[in-house]
Length: 261
Image (cartoon, rainbow, N blue to C red; front, side):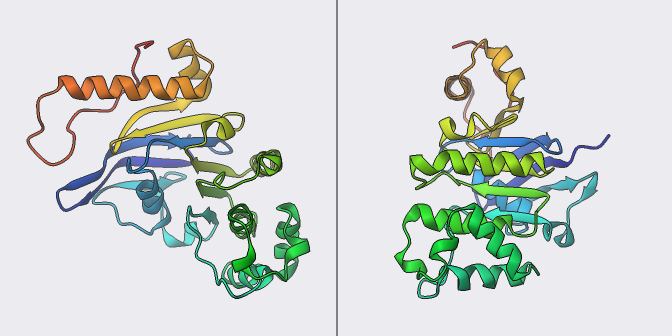
């Protein structure tokens, strides 16, 4: 059986800089994948390749066994880290603009604004919103139309701790209805209760990927944050022992470290 989503040797180069170097991993249907890594490691570039915003230099991305196309992406929901909104228009006006682009009725936007707790402030200008409210409006837009794939880039940024449980519950409901979630985040504590799978990007390389339970067993460790730091340390030590590369970008292969620290 084909995986739901598959990255096949995806590379992205910007002149002498290699942003992504041979990314290979699969995503199962109805899973929640935590995409982890420090700033500048390629997470947003990888999401851009998936969404058609960035053209890979090499490799392909497949959806249900076939090369992904623009028609497939119409069934995706996307929340970028920095959402471009019309600051002097209302919450409703902004949501309605994007809902129409997605060919969704007003009742669908109303439903999603209620889910994220913004329906009561639908007439408020976007420039008057807090950062967390910006994020929730972006999530409502992404949720419109019941997308089969939700791609979220730093969805927990600016979210009030009192709202975090609500956001996590919304994401659980989405997975339970059959959506697949790919979430790039630095907030490991927020994604850990949700994640079924993990992919760790370091310096444009896939350092580890797979079901979270398998990573926990491999490292004899329950904490995802501890596993992440162990993988990062092992990758740094491996890189330090290698000779200088003869071409731009690292040349070693990504692998799941077996070291326990």
